[in-house]
Length: 209
Image (tube, rainbow, N blue to C red; front, side):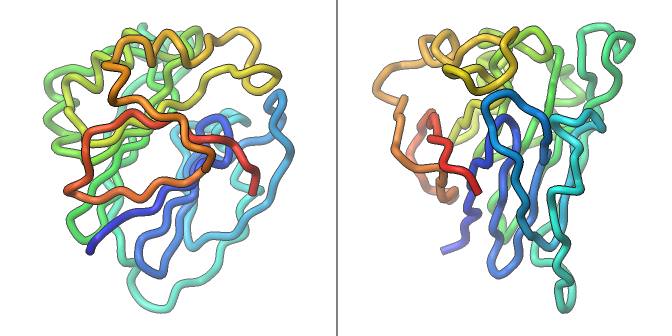
């Protein structure tokens, strides 16, 4: 069965496995409560060039023999609600592998336009910021999810205890907007995305690289 495996590496950083290939999204450095890390992958993509999302030095690129077995689409957005005037641009990455599509929203700072919703299209899972201040807050993230209707929702870029930027919110206000039957808190940093998985909102557990 076709799938994409998503592993959370902290804040908004994930390692995705698509068949025998891997990619990393939004590697970071200097984020409160998260240790510095190094990892290896066949490719790395960043939503923007701030150190907590664009620290490509943390990823050792491993050459891949042949064409990578996944496709990456980019939808341009902004890091704020002022068309980038405050914090600049932000890229949404959509990764597709054998028909399974997942979207990583980086530091999305505004509601999506109808054109952006159409450009992103149908996705099976989203990794979406929920902490507010630098990004959309819980209500904004829920509105994005309602527009896209993914099978799986993975909140990111929130504060939990000593982890995450101290000015952003916790994940709880976002989770409270969902039917509690959909919400889970598994003791794992990994989820496997398939096209027939049940609807769910999953707060992954940080384990480190």
